[in-house]
Image 1 (cartoon, rainbow, N blue to C red):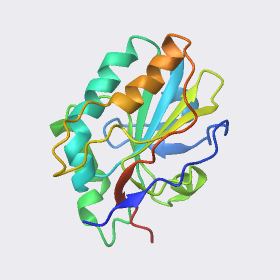
Image 2: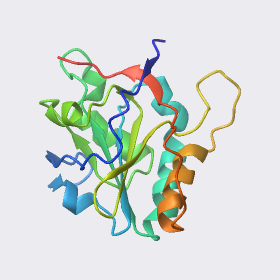
Image 3: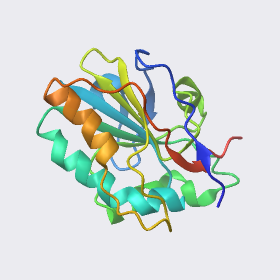
Length: 184
């Protein structure tokens, strides 16, 4: 299992906009339609990555826990579906249903959105504040498949809490580790 780290987009970057089809809703979404009034988590995932499968339950819990506190969540898959048909939009819809994903799960067929976010791996996490400025990019937590550390979501939860409770967030952040995005 190859381990690719996040590219660590510069803090303060304005959230790149997008207009992508949701595989679990019958419509397209842009950034403004996904954002929360306090902040927004944008994550790059896919259906088959063992790193994503390891943490998907925690991702869904975070979305459910923080939605009521004004945090929007959107997931994007940018993998090449010709080489990786298990990541097709139809399979993404199935994955969303199986994993109880009720936030938009978008398909980035052109891979332009992944490039705009400088996404590198799945999962790759970005947290934007109410002004759509990047305040966190990095890992969910220290857990990885097979390392024995329980999944807690602690790093991302701490970053979200910094928005909600107006706390200082350390700018030293650990990159996410996962499967590389499958580029065309």
